[in-house]
Structure formats: structure tokens, C-alpha cells
Image 1 (spheres, rainbow, N blue to C red):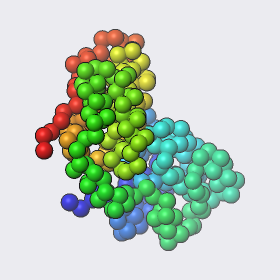
Image 2 (image 1 turned 30 degrees about the vertical axis):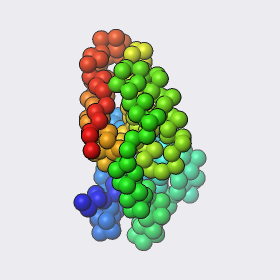
Image 3 (image 1 turned 45 degrees about the vertical axis):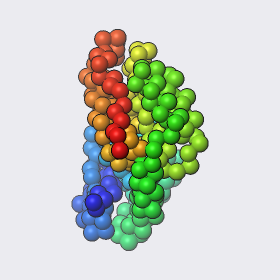
Image 4 (image 1 turned 120 degrees about the horizontal axis):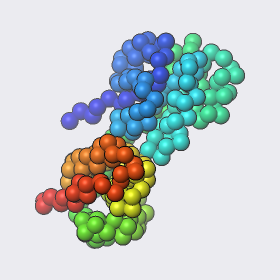
Amino acid sequence: MRPAPPVIALAGAPPWADDVSDLLRRHGFEPRRYADPANYVEALAHDQAALVLVDGAGEGWAFWTTAPKVEQATRRVPVIVLAPDAGRRQAAIRAGADLTLAPDQIGTALLDQIERLARVPDPAEIERLDCQCREALPPLAQDGIRKFNAGAYYAQHDAFETQWMAEPGPVRDLYRAILQVGVAYYHITRANHAGALKMLLRSVQWLARLPDVCQGVDVRQLRADAAAVRAALLALDPAEIGTFDRALLRPIRLIEP
């Protein structure tokens, strides 16, 4: 299957959006506009944005620049700010931008920097992940899943953290993803609404990288379960966290080879 083109986020309402979008499409990227501040960081995480472009002359430029950098789920996403004023470009770097350019550099200079900075998956790393996902689930991870499925969400953290730290290959994302979903479920059992939402959002970046089945784990189902839990949390008043339907905290499904 041909991989989807990397998403380049155009934050806010930049006047150069149409020109840059055409440039990006011609070079194999998918431009996508993000104009809702309330869902900005969440959307970047879910879309696996490879890079963010910000209009440094526009209203709210500091928010569009800083917001991704202060959230664990998106802090690795590079941000380029386009601003005509040198003072604003300096301020953008202080706000967390990885690079600043002048708008008259839209064209080859901008494209070169996007291609240099964008977080595009390495084909060799994807192939290595696919190979590792065809391997058996290690014993320590099996133990972590048993604890997860028994509702021992605190204990599963230790098992998966040890497994994740011991694994240098890309399949470590599987262990990190399960760990973070489990910690989110633990926060729910401890009535920590904000903590649960934060961990579920962090898990998105790792779950999205994985194939639908990895080392026998039904990742597709885990993604769906975690998304359902997050949607239910968002619909619930934080003060009512004690009424959360724990039937939504479903066990991890294993698929026999």
C-alpha cells in the first residue's frame, strides 16, 4: 500500500496559504489548514502532522507557534514561522519556532527547509517495524498485557516501561503506546480526568505508527478503544468522572498467528 503523503499544517489563516498549498502538493505533501484553536494540538496529533507553518504577521501567531511545543504529543513537530519583520522572527524563535523565514522566501527556500525538517517516516524504519511486528510478543510484554487486562493498570506500567527501555528497535512504540493507554485508564480509576486525557493524547502518536496487528496485539482495536474512551471523557464533566462507564476500559485483544 502506498503511504499517505506527509501532512503539513498551515496554522491560523495565512494569506499565503493557497500558494504554499499548491507548492506542497506538487512535491508530495498534503497541506491541511488548522484554524480552530480549541482543537489545534489534538488535530496535529491525530493527523500525525510532519511540520507546522505559521503566519508570523497574523493575529495569534504566538499561540500557533507555542501550543505544539508545550504538549508532549506534539512537541517534536517542527514549526516554521514566516514573518517579514526581523524582530518578529526573533520573537518566534523565543516562542519555540524551529526556524523562521521571510515570506519572500516562499518557493525553493521554503521547500528545502520543509524537506529538511519535516518528520517523514523513514522507509527502512517502517520495514524494520513490520519485521519486528511479525515476531512473537516478548514474555515481559505478555506479562504487561495480563496485568492490563486484569485491570492492574499501575502494575502494567512497570512491565511495559522495562520492555520499552530494553528494546532499541521501532517496535518499542508498541510497548510505549500500551503503557500510556494503561496509565490513562489508571487515571480514570483515580478520578483524574485531566491526567487521563493527557495520556490518551500522548498515546496517539505511537499507536498511529503501528500496523493494525503487531506481535499479536490487535492495535486497530486498541486504537478504537482508546478513542472511544477519550470521546467519552471529553463528553463528561470532569467533576462527574466518578460516573465514567468503566465497561469502556476494554482489555487488549490478542490475535493468534
